[in-house]
Length: 144
Image (cartoon, rainbow, N blue to C red; front, side, top):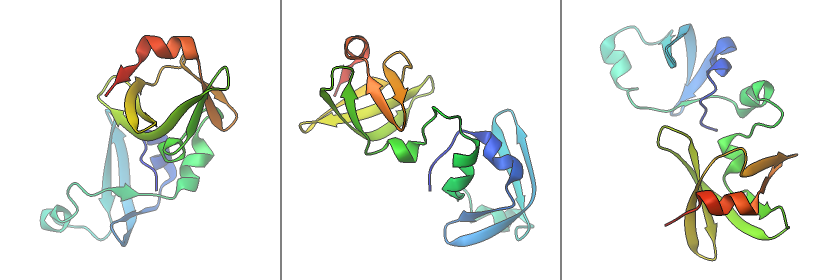
C-alpha cells in the first residue's frame, strides 16, 4: 500500500487499515495539511494511544482514481528503471526521500547510489515511465 501526500484521497474514505485491523471512520477533517480522523471503535485517549505513530493504509486503487495523468505513485516509482533522452541506462530508483523542499530520488547504478531532487525539467513523464534529461541531470546530481 503506497504512502501519499495527496490529501484529497481522504475526502471519500469510509474505512482504512491500521496494522491488521480494519477501522471504520466516524468523522474526518483536513486542516492545515493534517488529517484528523475519529474512528468508530476508538472512544478514549487510552484507546487511541495504541495507534500512535502507526501507518494508516488505504487501497491503492483510491489513489489511482484521483491522481493526474502524468503523476506517479511512490509505490510505482520504487524499482523503476530510468533511461536518459539518448536511451542510455541511468539507474534504478531504490528509494524516495523528502527533506521538505522536494522529493529526492535515490538512484542506484553499478552498486553506487546517488540522490537527485525531483525536478520536472530533469524527469520528463512519458507514459508510465520517466525519461531523464541527461544535461540537466548533471546540474542536480548528488553522489553518495
